[in-house]
Length: 274
Image 1 (cartoon, rainbow, N blue to C red):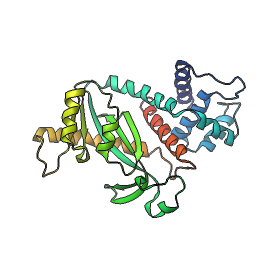
Image 2: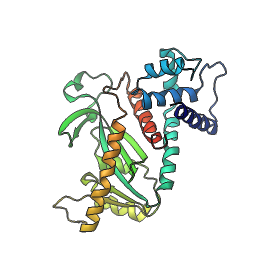
Image 3: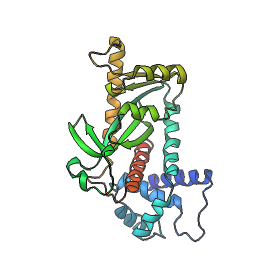
Image 4: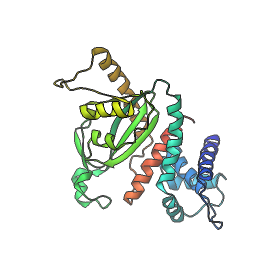
């Protein structure tokens, strides 16, 4: 754990220096240390920030440790774009190593509370947060994480939307910053002939979505086999990501939930290096 913690701190510190983020000279803990604490908590302590704080202070990793409430406030002061920059810096490495230029896209539910309790949920408000998980065959209340990963399960791009947003609608608003001649595999929810055509003509990226049995345009047997085999990897990626989640994610505000999800994605990416 010693080497992993040092590596995480070096990544955060170097990034903040590149972004030229200034620190208050009176701060006992700089932003790089706070970010290291948060990522370490997700990787080794089940996202329990309190336990991570006690461990890092007790073992001498962080001597001038802030109080729990002050640490939480400092954590929320770090702009979300900084966290996302760390993720995309790591994803650039995955993209450069992906010589085949093959990717997989899918989504997973992030349940804030059971749908039956949504009427008294204080974190979120609105029917747009009611979604349906086909795999579990149930409605839920919360968000949906849309992820593009390599065929090795390495995450390269993600967005978080309300649970009601359709997969293809979320895919349209993603940056899809992939190299030309890339191939992206998707399930039946990503079937959109016009979007597939425009994506290939403008971005030179091919979207291969699984077809329904009654679809007008069917794939060849070989293409269908490759698509189904490649798509299995993203299910494995989601399983590895969910393994980082605690049994219950502590949440007080909507901003806090979104922040933790981004930190989970960074921790998931770092597991490929640790």
